[in-house]
Amino acid sequence: VASTTLLQLGVSKEDVMVPEREGADQEGMLP
Image 1: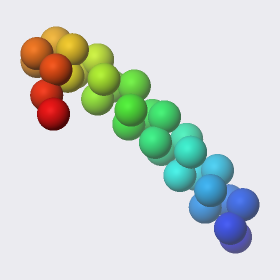
Image 2: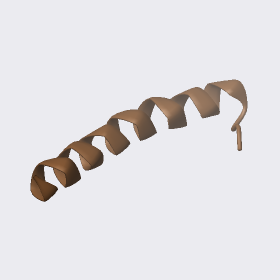
Image 3: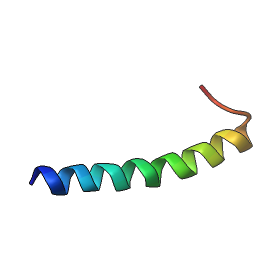
Image 4: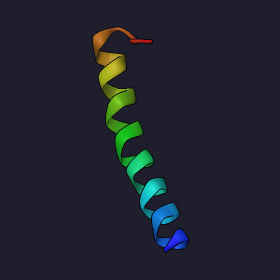
């Protein structure tokens, strides 16, 4: 369960970090 959660967390973080970074860049780097 821990492995699955860690894997899902890592994927979710990457999935969320990519669009967030792109969006922040387009919005003007939000804090």
